[in-house]
Length: 411
Image 1 (cartoon, rainbow, N blue to C red):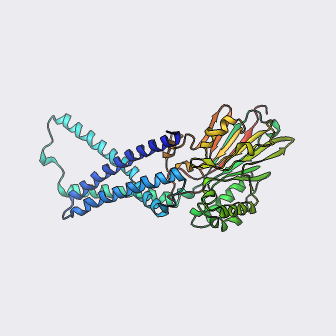
Image 2 (cartoon, rainbow, N blue to C red):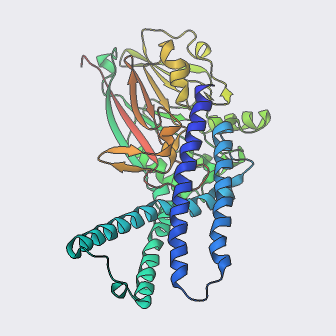
Image 3 (cartoon, rainbow, N blue to C red):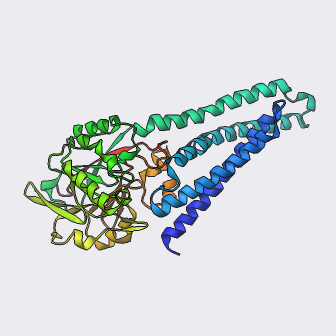
């Protein structure tokens, strides 16, 4: 069994356990609430079960399609929104109820220890009091749905600019301080207007980067999605140059449309590198900026030998490779790239940060899913992307612009 299939099965198993457990737990709370109310038809209790089973099958189906093909052409955008609305609010809701139950359990134990007797029936809350408590509980349970709406309407556009300094072994002191800006996964087909990308480009230009690298997925499925945004991409500014590579979604179309997309990208002034490289001379020192076509699960368009053909091994090389799985697959062992820039994962779009560490379901699928990684004196940076695919939502994982300042060890 291949590592990709093994990780897929493991991810689906974990997903089934977590979502099934949460759905059952929330169902018990929902049923208890209905039991307090009067004249509630049994169909309302069964309705939750029917919907939960249906949504669970939709979740598994869309997840398998997404991870095996890289898209949701069959299951579609509407199902992704349904999944977001049904599942996402239940995570904080479950935490709230678990916390509430834990407090209740502690209070009950303390009372039992003090009285050393079982609480009498007459001491139990009245029916009216229970109704009030349940009403308060249900009102509080609306908060996660508000948080989900926040993820759709706000976090999805709340761009985070990350700045890091990276010491590259072998980098000439003449190249010390070069500012490399990366964006990824624009996914213009997921936008509701041009305002967000315009804001992103304004932020990018304020960074006054020397080099801009765009690591793929300009659209979802069709070059027409990019048409409205071409004037905005033409506004990108870099001191030395703007370079791009292709992603998996840039191939989800016919050959003719794929060529049309590549032509459109290049029309903006982006130097699109498809298994190609450029040697840049800066301050009398050379640095290579290269781009492979996408290689990852279900796509094998990259060609490292072609990409670095004729390129000096003495120069520091920066490689744009959309899917980070390519790094372990071939790039690292080839020794051809000192720094690899990837995207693709979106950071999972949903996650949480605790004590400076981020956690997301994406880490069960991708060994390298967000941030900086290093092996054998080689580096990989995985950008969380600007856009979204699937559910148009981000919770705890904001979109990202990365600014990497390259440092020489001898500067």
